[in-house]
Image (cartoon, rainbow, N blue to C red; front, side, top):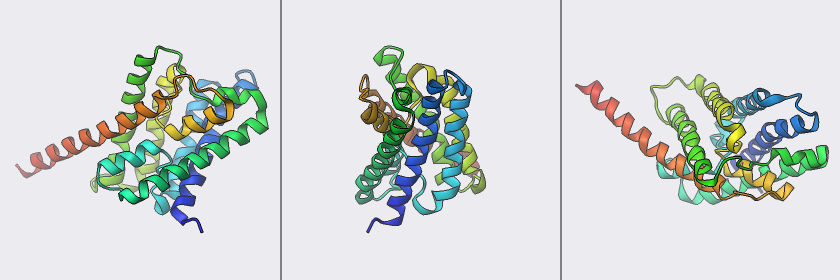
Length: 222
């Protein structure tokens, strides 16, 4: 029997990919009716809803980079990492194939393919993920941050990242979000960027936030 938190990760990632990348696919299917702002809002909205719906069950990672980031932060048991990532990839893949079934070739637009050279694309994915993971670290690990704002803060981070980087790299920040559509559409160009960038960015963000947090704690003691 699948453990509830693994099911929650699969379900949450399924809806993240269905609605976020799905909005990009529908934009292509309708010849631009959704638009770049609409796609960014779709990502932000589905993530906010997913965090509030499932965060208390699994932590609402929905992202292998976030799971690995929490491992670096020592807030994720190592034995849970592989099952979490497998659940996320399964959910993302199921959503991507459903999109392909519903909108056909327009689902190609749900895939993340860089429109800039590989190294700048990698750098952008790292930086965008640093910002996202900084926000996640703050709302998920710091008691000074008000709990009820968690979903909104993370959703806004994703939305802002998508507005800035969506036209350049797809603003993935999430290997599962890129893997599912790549598998469903056969578009693997630059796919390594969407693993290396988010994972490196999440790890850097954990180290950066821990440094900042220790510094503020020291300042408060003075």
